[in-house]
Length: 254
Length: 284
Image (tube, rainbow over all chains, first blue to last red; front, side, top):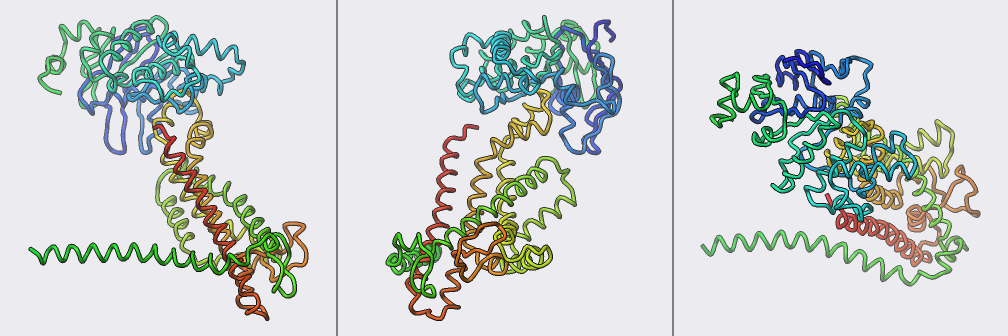
């Protein structure tokens, strides 16, 4: 599948944990300002692929990547590319909310401060904008100096989204962002994703197929490290090309 | 049936006895020191130089010397130990080399303190020609407590959740900044607790300083780190073995021991209080 407006492409990517091959020949285009969902049973490689897109897998000893991941024309695995720069452009939200044990304000400004946002005014503007974008501003605007640890799980996760947005990334990777949350918090995050795609490209890994169907424009189905099918979400969930996809989405395995 | 209960009771009695006998021994020891030493304690004892072949006067130079040596040891061992721990647990690729370094650190912890003393004598006093002085003694004590500090720091670094590191790195913050701004601040309480226990150990040791820093008697207080000092543990040793008036100095020996024990226990107590305070405050 080729689109004109792609922001990230993977080309024949293989990924190894030691000798275990976790991804096999994955070639994908992620379109700009769209939501792409990655689904598949546990251990199928979807989270591995996600973490590969901003080089978070670099942190695990004994891993190896083959193939290319092109982000705006450059292979992010080229020698001489600093993964720190990549992660500034491609942000990440994790499965479990992981705010720092700092105040709400300091959580948001932590990254930008280290990137030269020094003036108090600029920081305050950034905090408000980021929290508004993450639809958390109204709930926390009076308690910005309270520890982030006092927020509820759903609020913490939206804070983590705001924290990622404060770096003004181009792409937001979300690794099962609602799997630790209750249904109401989950609904809020899903609404948020729909809002955010106007300004950001979002790639989301989810265990929840209804969620993929609700929030995404494109869906990729993975099984045993292979990309089985990659299609517009509506097509994949109604008229899948592959038999394995159909079996998975109808609940016959996985 | 009754035989089985009897066995159970007997077994419990034995383990209970073991635990209580330890507590009793410590208690008896502390009470004995307190009873015998308290009489010697006075403002004069804590604030004056020894007089008349140490049969009169106080132990102020020894208290001060122990303070200098311990502070020096911490100044040397804390940065070195924390840096090593950061390398071992945050940077180094886990493999055979790192395993050997870890085993080395653990072995260092088991080396008898007199060996450290002789090592300090050979390296700092003789080879590097520092002479017997505060610097040599502090370096030797620093090496002695290094394994304690490395161990405590590694433990503290490991207790910082991996998710904090991921969150920071995921924001495009470098590994070094992540360690500096997220990992270290959250590990600091644990590191400090370990270091305080190290202080207690350093303050109480005799063997490492007897060849490297401690003087039998100094007429003046030290004016630089290249001067010899008196020190509490060595002073006890001197009073108890090397004096000409062992009988006359006996109350002073007990007094000095009491001061030393109170100092070490006090430092340990501070560590325990800090640790329990932080455990209560910890929110992840």
